[in-house]
Image (cartoon, rainbow, N blue to C red; front, side):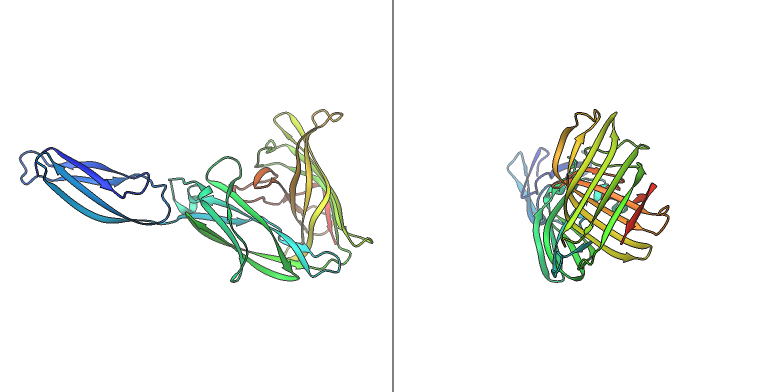
Amino acid sequence: LGVNLSVAAVGLPAGMSLELTSTTDDATLPGVRTWRVIGATTAAPGSYPVTVSVTDELGGVGTTAFTIVVTPEDAEATHNGDMVAFTPYGGSVANVLLRAVVRDSSVVPSYGDALPGDIRNATVTFKEGATVLCGPLAVELINGETTTGAANCIASLAVGVHQVDVYVNNYYTGMASALIEIAQPAGNSATGDGYLTIGTSGGAYKANPGSKMDFGFSTGYKNNKSLWGQVYLIFKKDGKTYQVKGAAFDSFGIATGPDGKVSDFRARVTLSDATNPKTPIVVGSNLTLQATMTDKGEPGTSDMIGFTIWDGNKLVFSSEWTGAKTLEMLVKGGNLVVN
């Protein structure tokens, strides 16, 4: 081969190219010129045969072939759906919300990955054992960042404790598990009021750090043998006051945990700008509010609760967001009673 060389590669995955890395000096014979493959690919996982040809000014050609294997990106999955739920009164099956938050490994420090991908290339499947409950489902972005998304569906689960596994596939790989308890109602109820001191809120309407969030709720099964309830939240964001109200409850459940009685409920709510309380302005309707709580007994000074509001797979509000889920916080100036 002569001195003036041209190089061409066929079959490189999208986003990858050849880069000249070194050429020996004129005194070294025979001379050596080296290229390497660089770039982060956006191609789907799989094997990509590559052929590289080098041509000199005299028409001499040399070729080499190799295969690039693209493996799925790691992803962290976290279940954010119902954890306990009651069947309809007298029934044996409950409709349960399954929701997974999926994060690209680049935003999870334990993975040590500095190159972010696009989590929209992931899919989520919910299974119980070998049974597919729903999926594969497309992952939608939570807040516009391409590293964090969510997927959800409604599944019917019978009375008992179910291990639901979350599988992340397609361009990504990951897995998580959750235990979901389904029971029959027997006059059960939960009530609470008080306030939280906001730490790290999340969502499009995340509250100001250090601000106060008031809450109140009551829900349960009464004489009419149907689920009823009401819930309100009031919080501050950027000089405005926001109000959340709802009275249409879709799910409610109670279980006994190691620290006391645990409960969660799911309701459809409206979010309003109530800076002027006489003329509140609706900014979101038919939103899904999820609450999880731990009643640690009287007088309620150790009770914990957390609130999350979703618009489909868009995160609207979280009282304490980790990047993947809402943490329960200490209730101040109030009490939770779970029966």
